[in-house]
Image (cartoon, rainbow, N blue to C red; front, top):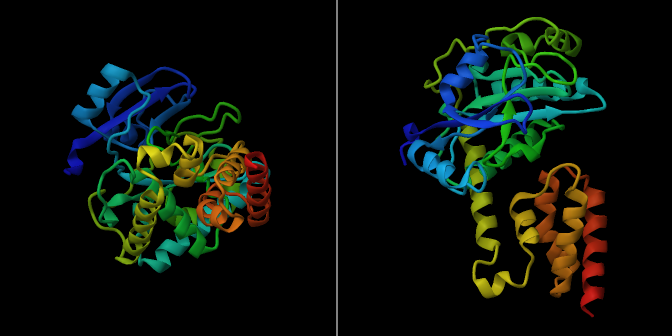
Length: 325
């Protein structure tokens, strides 16, 4: 599949619930990254790119919801958030950039780093350093790739809820509606030397040109990062194969359970989603051990602590088995 076909994005000027429009992803992103956009007001762009003809046809027929076709990305997005202490999220992003530089002999000048304007930092890794294939599972592979990197780098505060094909991501040089600060781009070389207070202070200034000095198409890292991508791809493929595909088998599990196994859940409803998935498995006779084998990994990728995961699976399975008795 030719990645040049994946040129379409979705832009949303104003709050995320405002009207969405199809756009040229590269132009929209570069305009904001360079600080040349007509306004620094709140603005969002799809994290992923869509094939032009197929996506336009879908939107014309169905609107922006329900697209299940292939996606790709120019950059792998990573969002480090900590509402109670943004300094911790900024430090996590800094350690991740340093880890990539050391682990993959990376030219970090190709990486895009932005202070988010509120709770942490956005890091975008150029896809040009990796051999990837567009597809419906591309966002899931990105999610596990990012999780594996953070695991080995020993960093936390990665928001794993952002990896779905329709995700909107805050534009560089756009203003956060609550803090009034800019989502300001920062040179990675400067970022790894700055303290968190200095990073946050940049958000109170004006727009900055975050255009990387290295051409997007150039390979910027060693083959080491490909190893992480391959592991993530293998994991997603294995997970998909483990989910029942026959209609008669699917009737034994709720759709929400299958979705949790494949995707996990976002902060705010992940505990309930895990409990319901465990209970559903318990209804059909799954043991606590089997439920843990299916649910532990997506729950961890959703950011839940290990003890909470184990306790929730245990009580969920027991609840489901009791109800089925």
